[in-house]
Length: 110
Length: 112
Image (tube, rainbow over all chains, first blue to last red; front, side, top):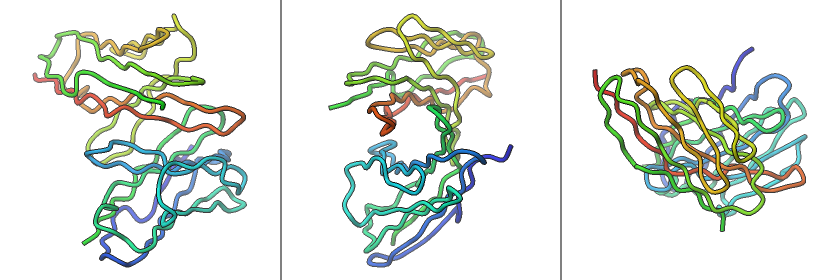
């Protein structure tokens, strides 16, 4: 069974730009969660989608948004990028409780 | 506020030297506790889920245990390939609206 895939794997953007990251969950998994990982803060929850609806949201500004499509694939968008948005963005999918992570997208904001 | 604390932050072991990693938590509505392994530049790899105090799970040289306030990841006779960052997370929330709260991790280095 294929794992969680994320594209692109690496991104370099400049301040003020916006970015869209993509996540394809494990086949049959309907829940997709997004996390931001930085050396200082560790892994922090961004939001979770289930059946195209946002079920839960972390403490991030409104510049961070997401959506889920009918095939469970998900995207997250960050608008007006700031230097502090540089991080590894991880997507995880789950069937019931266990969350399985993708390899992440490394975003660098210059 | 839900909190997860892992200790130590870093641990160096000689090959074959057994030890334990600690994960203590303060949460409301614990749904489950998860252990992950993360290698540099990769996403976390799922290891174990524990749901109730007294529960234990094993996988190769790893054994995870859970009490009401903390969990331990015991590593028996580690090998260099066990070197990684080990992350603990608790699942909180209810009614299908759940999220993982992570600790900062323990970076384990096993020297040959």
